[in-house]
Length: 423
Image 1: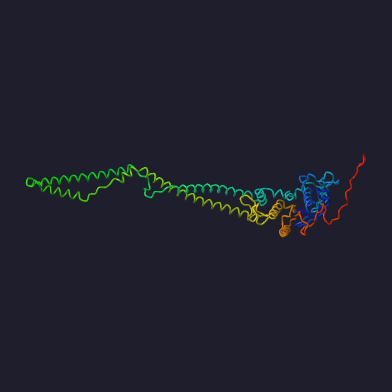
Image 2: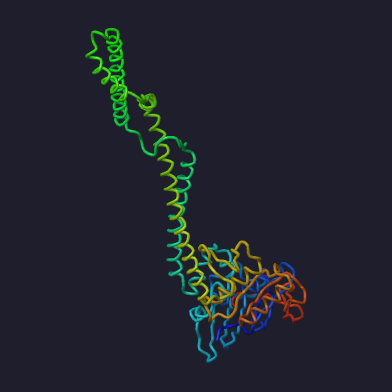
């Protein structure tokens, strides 16, 4: 059974003069009133009574009062907590009449239930760590987040490298007219020499033909004297004409130009190779990027499944990127009422023995939200004692000038006069 407050009596604490309250066991007990009437003083007194001297107000005794603070709280298991006297010493009495102290209270009182703003003012990551501590998946989730971070950083590097390669490839010129590999100067010179040799042979044949024609002409003029030699010359001439017919000289101009421009050609070839290499590298990095993205998505899916399987204190709660989220919204995007609801649920789960929580300044909730919040508290079997700047019907009681409106006020204090020698 979780511990709750059945009754409380407070006298002369901060702005409170005399207040008696019997909070509802499950749900919301709203202490209403105007500003500076003592609403928050009630919560401070409860925190002091149950939480120990760390919650003692710096000026605990009500200003103007000659009677020291008096706190009396009865818990739902019969435990009685009192602070009274000049030093406001703590006295804890169990139903069997046995005395105890702060150590017993600490077993069922969750400190953050007394000081909810401390939790609400923590960073989103600190809130997330508290939640993970509660549901017991912190180490596994931390390992998944470490893996995700490593993959994310690697993917970022791969993506940037791919971008650089693609940009470099786009900036490179491309020359479709040049060979696919660098040109060899020695190869071009060899080809040139072969052509020159062939052209030289052609020239030799032309010269031979010319010579024979001259001789033939000479023989013809001397036909009578050279008749015997004519037949042989005719045969030779026939052969020479047959071998020289259809001969075509090849130009070496292109090779000569290529030799002179070989550095420019090779520069273009290298540029094409660089462009092709950059495009291929970029493609490879893009494939790595896709694989890393798939791995990251798988880890995120594992994180989601891990939280889905966990016993969360509130449906819709989760942790994303190390921060607390509720229905997909981070803390700074939650409404004030959502922040209160989330905080209450988490703090309650920190110590299930503590069945109550103190809430200040519920005026940030409209009436519909307030009603919904109260229903959720009842459903959770949780007791909340809260303050609200209001005197409306939603308030369980109204504080006016340190008293509960409608309650009978105690007699006015009388200042005691001490006489010398009398104790």
